[in-house]
Length: 361
Image (cartoon, rainbow, N blue to C red; front, side):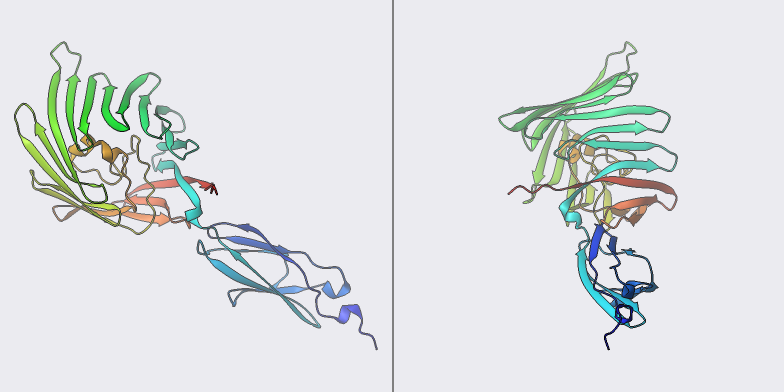
């Protein structure tokens, strides 16, 4: 006797992977026609682990997945007369295939830092303020070789700018000027990559002669072209200061102010650094090295550090073995921080612009 259609197991069906992200994936399927495909329930397994039973919807979202990971899926449709299993697979997105760029840095008091980038993913603008008032814009322009030409800081009126001059492919001069009720000029004149003169002029516009200072600076580098020694000499007094640097796994782990006897040690997490090099920074992670708010003011007199980015994020900073700062993080699935808690209290939230890499053959 011929078996009636409604007495058969469910018909085969097609499963579609609709959406994948770094930590989620959504699959869906259509119920085939036929009496045997009425009143079906589904069991869903991920890598041989059942994640849903007696499921009646036609789509399912997997959450809490690992990035850059392949997964196998089995969906078993059942009726009173049997079951039909369909298998498929998917992979979550790989952060290495994307440029993940800090877009917003939001302090708990509502103070915001927003970033914009050009087509080469270089930062070209930083806007600082809150929802009601923009305090200033910081804009950067580049030459055809993606070298910084100019950085402007503006409020409603100009506040300062930094101009870079090159010759024969080498940086020859940096001229920085700032106005905030007083006038300050910093000039860096290079004789080589590792030797330059630094001049400082400060005028409080009181009518008194401006304060001027001049220094000669020499650098030494390691085999990875990272600065390991900074020596600065006051050309008037011949007083000299020496600072040394140590690195581990792409992170600046120690700054030793040899002359003053102050040693800064920095410990890091193993996740991706959110820091944006080359631009005026928010109060965390301070200054120009992407990590700290210590007293080492000479760091700003090393132009290399304006463009330096550590591989990871600082979790602890010690001054002569005494902890000065501690940072806790929460992370997005793509490996970049979503939240920072500084010294157990101050909270910062971060969001990113995620751009897929374009690979040229």
